[in-house]
Image (tube, rainbow, N blue to C red):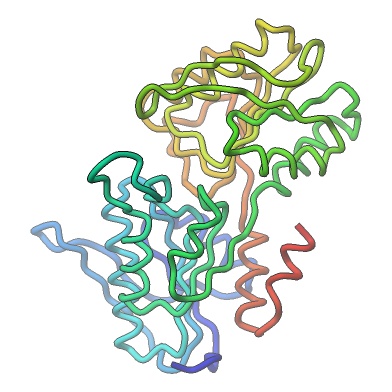
Length: 320
Protein backbone atom coordinates (compact mmCIF):
# COMPACT_ATOMS: atom_id res chain seq x y z
CA UNK A 1 0.00 0.00 0.00
CA UNK A 2 1.30 3.45 -0.91
CA UNK A 3 0.81 6.19 1.65
CA UNK A 4 -0.10 8.57 -1.17
CA UNK A 5 -1.34 7.82 -4.67
CA UNK A 6 0.34 9.37 -7.69
CA UNK A 7 -2.94 10.94 -8.83
CA UNK A 8 -6.54 11.15 -7.66
CA UNK A 9 -9.53 9.32 -9.13
CA UNK A 10 -13.15 9.32 -7.98
CA UNK A 11 -15.51 6.40 -8.65
CA UNK A 12 -19.13 5.88 -7.67
CA UNK A 13 -21.67 3.14 -7.27
CA UNK A 14 -25.35 3.55 -8.06
CA UNK A 15 -26.62 4.57 -4.60
CA UNK A 16 -26.27 8.36 -4.93
CA UNK A 17 -24.91 9.16 -8.36
CA UNK A 18 -26.03 12.78 -8.33
CA UNK A 19 -24.10 13.55 -5.13
CA UNK A 20 -21.03 11.75 -6.52
CA UNK A 21 -21.17 13.92 -9.64
CA UNK A 22 -21.50 17.07 -7.52
CA UNK A 23 -18.49 16.12 -5.41
CA UNK A 24 -16.38 15.27 -8.45
CA UNK A 25 -17.32 18.61 -10.04
CA UNK A 26 -16.26 20.46 -6.86
CA UNK A 27 -12.92 18.60 -6.88
CA UNK A 28 -12.53 19.41 -10.58
CA UNK A 29 -12.49 15.85 -11.88
CA UNK A 30 -14.79 13.63 -13.94
CA UNK A 31 -16.09 10.47 -12.32
CA UNK A 32 -13.93 7.45 -13.06
CA UNK A 33 -14.93 5.28 -15.99
CA UNK A 34 -16.74 2.30 -14.54
CA UNK A 35 -19.93 0.31 -15.02
CA UNK A 36 -21.88 -0.95 -12.01
CA UNK A 37 -24.66 -3.27 -13.14
CA UNK A 38 -26.10 -6.72 -12.56
CA UNK A 39 -25.75 -10.10 -14.21
CA UNK A 40 -28.95 -11.80 -15.34
CA UNK A 41 -29.12 -13.79 -12.08
CA UNK A 42 -29.01 -10.63 -9.97
CA UNK A 43 -25.33 -10.73 -8.95
CA UNK A 44 -23.51 -7.40 -9.00
CA UNK A 45 -21.24 -6.82 -12.00
CA UNK A 46 -18.39 -4.29 -11.84
CA UNK A 47 -16.17 -3.10 -14.70
CA UNK A 48 -13.36 -0.58 -14.12
CA UNK A 49 -12.57 0.92 -17.52
CA UNK A 50 -9.45 2.96 -16.80
CA UNK A 51 -6.03 2.44 -15.28
CA UNK A 52 -5.88 2.99 -11.50
CA UNK A 53 -2.45 1.50 -10.73
CA UNK A 54 -0.84 3.58 -7.99
CA UNK A 55 -3.74 6.08 -7.90
CA UNK A 56 -5.35 7.59 -4.80
CA UNK A 57 -8.91 6.31 -5.32
CA UNK A 58 -12.10 7.52 -3.64
CA UNK A 59 -15.31 5.46 -3.94
CA UNK A 60 -18.51 7.41 -3.23
CA UNK A 61 -21.32 5.10 -2.14
CA UNK A 62 -24.04 5.59 0.48
CA UNK A 63 -25.31 2.32 1.91
CA UNK A 64 -28.96 3.41 1.79
CA UNK A 65 -32.01 1.70 0.26
CA UNK A 66 -31.68 -0.84 -1.30
CA UNK A 67 -29.17 -1.31 1.52
CA UNK A 68 -27.82 -4.78 0.77
CA UNK A 69 -27.39 -4.09 -2.97
CA UNK A 70 -25.50 -0.88 -2.22
CA UNK A 71 -23.29 -2.56 0.40
CA UNK A 72 -22.33 -5.30 -2.06
CA UNK A 73 -21.62 -2.71 -4.79
CA UNK A 74 -19.28 -0.90 -2.41
CA UNK A 75 -17.44 -4.07 -1.37
CA UNK A 76 -16.97 -5.31 -4.93
CA UNK A 77 -15.83 -1.87 -6.12
CA UNK A 78 -13.21 -1.83 -3.36
CA UNK A 79 -12.08 -5.36 -4.27
CA UNK A 80 -11.89 -4.55 -7.99
CA UNK A 81 -9.78 -1.44 -7.39
CA UNK A 82 -7.53 -3.22 -4.89
CA UNK A 83 -6.88 -6.01 -7.40
CA UNK A 84 -6.16 -3.35 -10.03
CA UNK A 85 -3.31 -2.10 -7.78
CA UNK A 86 -4.80 1.21 -6.68
CA UNK A 87 -2.33 2.99 -4.41
CA UNK A 88 -4.82 3.89 -1.68
CA UNK A 89 -8.56 3.32 -1.47
CA UNK A 90 -10.89 5.55 0.54
CA UNK A 91 -14.50 4.45 0.97
CA UNK A 92 -16.57 7.65 0.99
CA UNK A 93 -19.85 6.65 2.68
CA UNK A 94 -22.05 9.74 3.18
CA UNK A 95 -24.67 7.56 4.89
CA UNK A 96 -23.45 4.45 6.72
CA UNK A 97 -26.23 1.86 6.84
CA UNK A 98 -26.61 -0.68 9.67
CA UNK A 99 -25.17 1.93 12.07
CA UNK A 100 -28.14 1.61 14.42
CA UNK A 101 -27.31 -2.04 15.08
CA UNK A 102 -24.29 -1.11 17.18
CA UNK A 103 -24.87 -3.23 20.31
CA UNK A 104 -26.79 -6.20 21.67
CA UNK A 105 -30.10 -4.73 22.77
CA UNK A 106 -31.41 -8.17 23.68
CA UNK A 107 -30.16 -11.75 23.80
CA UNK A 108 -28.76 -13.19 20.54
CA UNK A 109 -28.82 -9.86 18.69
CA UNK A 110 -26.17 -9.34 15.99
CA UNK A 111 -23.88 -6.31 16.04
CA UNK A 112 -24.30 -5.61 12.35
CA UNK A 113 -22.43 -2.29 12.39
CA UNK A 114 -19.25 -4.09 13.44
CA UNK A 115 -19.76 -6.69 10.70
CA UNK A 116 -20.09 -3.91 8.10
CA UNK A 117 -16.86 -2.35 9.37
CA UNK A 118 -15.08 -5.71 9.10
CA UNK A 119 -16.35 -6.31 5.56
CA UNK A 120 -15.22 -2.88 4.33
CA UNK A 121 -11.79 -3.42 5.86
CA UNK A 122 -11.37 -6.97 4.54
CA UNK A 123 -12.50 -5.88 1.06
CA UNK A 124 -9.41 -3.66 0.93
CA UNK A 125 -10.34 -0.11 1.96
CA UNK A 126 -7.47 1.86 3.49
CA UNK A 127 -9.65 4.49 5.15
CA UNK A 128 -13.28 5.58 5.48
CA UNK A 129 -14.79 9.04 5.07
CA UNK A 130 -18.34 9.36 6.38
CA UNK A 131 -20.79 11.80 7.96
CA UNK A 132 -22.77 11.72 11.21
CA UNK A 133 -22.55 8.11 12.25
CA UNK A 134 -25.56 7.22 14.40
CA UNK A 135 -23.14 6.70 17.29
CA UNK A 136 -19.69 8.36 16.98
CA UNK A 137 -18.06 5.42 18.80
CA UNK A 138 -18.66 3.34 15.66
CA UNK A 139 -15.36 4.80 14.49
CA UNK A 140 -13.76 2.33 16.89
CA UNK A 141 -15.36 -0.61 15.05
CA UNK A 142 -12.90 -0.03 12.19
CA UNK A 143 -9.25 -1.08 12.20
CA UNK A 144 -8.48 1.59 9.59
CA UNK A 145 -8.63 5.41 9.86
CA UNK A 146 -12.12 6.96 9.87
CA UNK A 147 -12.75 10.63 9.11
CA UNK A 148 -16.12 11.61 10.59
CA UNK A 149 -17.68 14.74 9.10
CA UNK A 150 -20.53 16.67 10.72
CA UNK A 151 -23.74 17.83 9.08
CA UNK A 152 -24.80 20.15 11.92
CA UNK A 153 -22.92 23.24 10.65
CA UNK A 154 -24.67 23.08 7.26
CA UNK A 155 -28.08 22.83 8.91
CA UNK A 156 -27.36 25.50 11.51
CA UNK A 157 -26.18 27.95 8.86
CA UNK A 158 -29.37 27.37 6.87
CA UNK A 159 -31.61 28.22 9.83
CA UNK A 160 -29.49 31.23 10.80
CA UNK A 161 -29.98 32.66 7.31
CA UNK A 162 -33.65 31.65 7.23
CA UNK A 163 -34.37 33.58 10.42
CA UNK A 164 -32.21 36.50 9.31
CA UNK A 165 -30.05 36.12 12.40
CA UNK A 166 -33.06 36.89 14.64
CA UNK A 167 -33.13 33.93 16.99
CA UNK A 168 -34.37 35.51 20.24
CA UNK A 169 -37.52 33.36 20.19
CA UNK A 170 -35.87 30.17 18.89
CA UNK A 171 -35.20 27.01 20.91
CA UNK A 172 -33.39 23.88 19.75
CA UNK A 173 -34.99 20.62 20.85
CA UNK A 174 -33.28 17.24 21.20
CA UNK A 175 -35.72 14.42 20.33
CA UNK A 176 -34.13 12.11 22.92
CA UNK A 177 -31.32 11.93 25.43
CA UNK A 178 -28.99 10.29 22.92
CA UNK A 179 -29.09 13.34 20.65
CA UNK A 180 -28.36 15.92 23.35
CA UNK A 181 -24.70 16.36 22.38
CA UNK A 182 -25.55 17.00 18.74
CA UNK A 183 -28.43 19.33 19.62
CA UNK A 184 -26.31 21.27 22.11
CA UNK A 185 -23.69 22.02 19.43
CA UNK A 186 -26.48 23.12 17.09
CA UNK A 187 -27.91 25.41 19.79
CA UNK A 188 -24.47 26.88 20.47
CA UNK A 189 -24.05 27.78 16.81
CA UNK A 190 -27.34 29.67 16.86
CA UNK A 191 -26.74 30.95 20.42
CA UNK A 192 -30.16 29.75 21.59
CA UNK A 193 -31.38 27.60 24.53
CA UNK A 194 -31.81 23.83 24.44
CA UNK A 195 -34.80 21.67 25.39
CA UNK A 196 -34.93 17.88 25.66
CA UNK A 197 -37.73 15.41 24.98
CA UNK A 198 -38.06 12.50 27.38
CA UNK A 199 -39.51 9.55 25.47
CA UNK A 200 -39.73 5.80 25.67
CA UNK A 201 -39.67 3.29 22.82
CA UNK A 202 -41.84 0.21 23.54
CA UNK A 203 -40.68 -1.45 20.30
CA UNK A 204 -38.68 -0.71 17.15
CA UNK A 205 -39.91 2.30 15.11
CA UNK A 206 -42.51 3.16 17.79
CA UNK A 207 -42.07 5.92 20.37
CA UNK A 208 -44.15 7.75 22.95
CA UNK A 209 -43.51 11.31 24.13
CA UNK A 210 -43.34 11.41 27.92
CA UNK A 211 -42.24 14.94 28.84
CA UNK A 212 -40.42 18.01 27.52
CA UNK A 213 -37.60 19.41 29.63
CA UNK A 214 -37.13 23.11 28.92
CA UNK A 215 -39.15 26.17 27.91
CA UNK A 216 -40.78 26.03 24.47
CA UNK A 217 -43.92 28.11 25.05
CA UNK A 218 -44.25 30.96 22.57
CA UNK A 219 -41.08 29.93 20.74
CA UNK A 220 -40.07 28.62 17.34
CA UNK A 221 -38.66 25.14 17.93
CA UNK A 222 -36.10 23.28 15.82
CA UNK A 223 -35.90 19.50 16.29
CA UNK A 224 -32.41 18.21 15.53
CA UNK A 225 -31.50 14.56 14.85
CA UNK A 226 -28.91 12.58 12.91
CA UNK A 227 -31.52 10.68 10.88
CA UNK A 228 -35.26 10.46 10.39
CA UNK A 229 -36.55 7.05 9.38
CA UNK A 230 -40.30 6.43 9.76
CA UNK A 231 -40.68 9.95 11.25
CA UNK A 232 -42.71 8.70 14.21
CA UNK A 233 -40.45 10.33 16.79
CA UNK A 234 -40.14 13.70 15.10
CA UNK A 235 -43.84 13.96 14.18
CA UNK A 236 -45.03 13.00 17.68
CA UNK A 237 -42.58 15.50 19.15
CA UNK A 238 -43.70 18.29 16.81
CA UNK A 239 -47.38 17.72 17.53
CA UNK A 240 -46.72 17.60 21.27
CA UNK A 241 -44.75 20.85 21.19
CA UNK A 242 -47.53 22.69 19.38
CA UNK A 243 -49.96 21.43 22.03
CA UNK A 244 -47.58 22.72 24.72
CA UNK A 245 -47.39 26.22 23.27
CA UNK A 246 -44.66 26.32 20.60
CA UNK A 247 -45.58 28.76 17.82
CA UNK A 248 -43.80 26.91 15.01
CA UNK A 249 -41.91 23.63 14.75
CA UNK A 250 -39.12 22.91 12.28
CA UNK A 251 -37.16 19.67 12.01
CA UNK A 252 -33.78 18.87 10.52
CA UNK A 253 -31.52 15.87 10.13
CA UNK A 254 -28.41 14.80 8.27
CA UNK A 255 -29.86 11.59 6.83
CA UNK A 256 -33.40 11.61 5.47
CA UNK A 257 -34.11 7.88 5.37
CA UNK A 258 -37.86 8.60 5.27
CA UNK A 259 -39.07 5.02 4.92
CA UNK A 260 -42.54 3.51 5.20
CA UNK A 261 -45.19 6.04 6.33
CA UNK A 262 -42.67 8.88 6.85
CA UNK A 263 -43.78 11.15 4.00
CA UNK A 264 -47.48 10.92 4.86
CA UNK A 265 -46.68 11.56 8.52
CA UNK A 266 -44.60 14.65 7.74
CA UNK A 267 -47.21 15.95 5.29
CA UNK A 268 -50.01 15.86 7.87
CA UNK A 269 -47.92 16.85 10.90
CA UNK A 270 -47.36 20.15 12.69
CA UNK A 271 -43.86 20.37 11.17
CA UNK A 272 -43.61 23.57 9.12
CA UNK A 273 -40.42 22.52 7.31
CA UNK A 274 -38.18 19.46 7.36
CA UNK A 275 -34.59 20.11 6.26
CA UNK A 276 -32.33 17.19 5.29
CA UNK A 277 -28.96 16.77 3.64
CA UNK A 278 -28.50 14.82 0.42
CA UNK A 279 -26.42 11.99 1.88
CA UNK A 280 -29.39 9.85 0.79
CA UNK A 281 -31.09 10.63 -2.54
CA UNK A 282 -34.70 11.76 -2.26
CA UNK A 283 -36.80 10.11 -5.00
CA UNK A 284 -39.39 12.24 -6.83
CA UNK A 285 -42.34 10.63 -5.04
CA UNK A 286 -40.94 11.82 -1.69
CA UNK A 287 -40.31 15.42 -2.71
CA UNK A 288 -43.08 17.33 -0.98
CA UNK A 289 -43.23 21.06 -0.34
CA UNK A 290 -42.43 20.66 3.37
CA UNK A 291 -39.04 19.03 2.67
CA UNK A 292 -35.92 21.05 1.84
CA UNK A 293 -32.70 19.28 0.81
CA UNK A 294 -29.23 20.82 1.23
CA UNK A 295 -26.07 19.50 -0.40
CA UNK A 296 -23.01 18.07 1.35
CA UNK A 297 -20.89 18.18 -1.82
CA UNK A 298 -18.74 21.10 -0.64
CA UNK A 299 -17.65 19.54 2.65
CA UNK A 300 -16.97 16.12 1.11
CA UNK A 301 -15.02 17.66 -1.76
CA UNK A 302 -12.85 19.61 0.66
CA UNK A 303 -12.27 16.51 2.80
CA UNK A 304 -11.25 14.48 -0.26
CA UNK A 305 -8.82 17.19 -1.37
CA UNK A 306 -7.31 17.31 2.12
CA UNK A 307 -6.91 13.52 2.31
CA UNK A 308 -5.26 13.45 -1.11
CA UNK A 309 -2.99 16.35 -0.18
CA UNK A 310 -2.08 14.82 3.20
CA UNK A 311 -3.54 17.88 4.91
CA UNK A 312 -5.03 17.59 8.39
CA UNK A 313 -8.74 16.82 8.46
CA UNK A 314 -8.99 18.01 12.07
CA UNK A 315 -8.71 21.61 10.89
CA UNK A 316 -11.80 20.98 8.79
CA UNK A 317 -13.64 19.87 11.93
CA UNK A 318 -12.53 23.06 13.63
CA UNK A 319 -14.01 25.12 10.80
CA UNK A 320 -17.27 23.20 11.22
